[in-house]
Image (tube, rainbow, N blue to C red):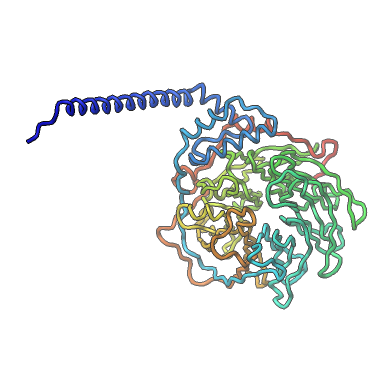
Length: 580
């Protein structure tokens, strides 16, 4: 056996020593780096630092907790907030890097699944679905449906309700007549990016007219592209366009009501705008020529982000109050109480985070106590596209004397519209809820997708969830009413091609080809059924035992702070609103 030379032993020992030295150097460097990082983390999360970030991030809206979004989404959100603040001339007293580190270090890797989404089956109502596509629709390869609103109302005076459709793809408003299949759908008029509609006899000639909230542009913009357009009835099936207000931000909603009880129809207008150029308006009808009435514009609220507006006597004092939903960073349910000296604004509910995503508002006596309740949905997912477990449907129960109790009903990803309806004739209202999700979110959302659910009333305050449609979560709007004239409530479901909203979210498969799906109600079939495992939602009890289903209560200090930050002006400080 050959002996290993001494020099080889020495070289090997030197190499081993060098390797050990290098390892020790790297280990010590990493330990030093770890200690430095730990020191940075400790400093970022220290009480003074946390207090500074909390104060900075709650200066313009309710404080967003780190668990509002997954960790990977916070860089985009924080940078966006700093950009908005800079655009508005607001100085944030902490650096972007500090705020970003503070949120990323505490945010979860992913959001939890939405609770309580059990399915009790389709129920007893039988349906026949009929797709509709306008004759003047663009080729599917060019542009799919972009239905922003469907509504059932008597516009043309038929034996059933007309289905009114606002479509951005064709920039037209249609009237479908399922009660008269021999009659083709009517094109009421052409308007730039039509939104919600109000059927009213504006000129008091005995014929129903149509007032349209025109967005002007579907994609976000601060430009004054919105308008309010009146399609005045000039014949049995003919209308003439009259622009009542223009130069507005994107107009999301319009409602007709005689707020002053002078016999003239006033208009309430929800202007979304974008980061600015929004507001809540009252167009007071002061008379004039019947073909061109005069309106005085009053500003109820000058903030951007209004999505919905309604008029209702909420406190039963004989005056019509105004209730509105505002999104953007505000995320509030607002009531403007009518009084002797005008309107008094009040935040009746403040969402717990600025990404709540309000999408819809309906007013109905859901609880049966004789007072109008407020039904709201939150499911906007067009900005930070991730499935959010706090999206869903809620009830603001009207307790009287100006008091409302928030009651969570159910979670639903992308919830957009909740329409109260009694489908089974039991004399108690349930809810039909439609949802819209970008495909990238729908594909990653936990559990099966839900495009349309029926919350069937099974007790005084009990509901069960029935999934009526699960394929394609493409429905920003749904309407309910007797469209066929047979005495049963039918439903109409509007389709929104995701690629129209955001080209990056276009369907990877076949494009959508239906604009509206009419669900004809064929009646009830069989006895009531409910699987044993189906959860019964009791909205008075908080809809189950999960903490996420309990009523959300906002500290009074937060409400006071947000209220003090709003810029509101009385609509009619010098006038008196008469009692009805």
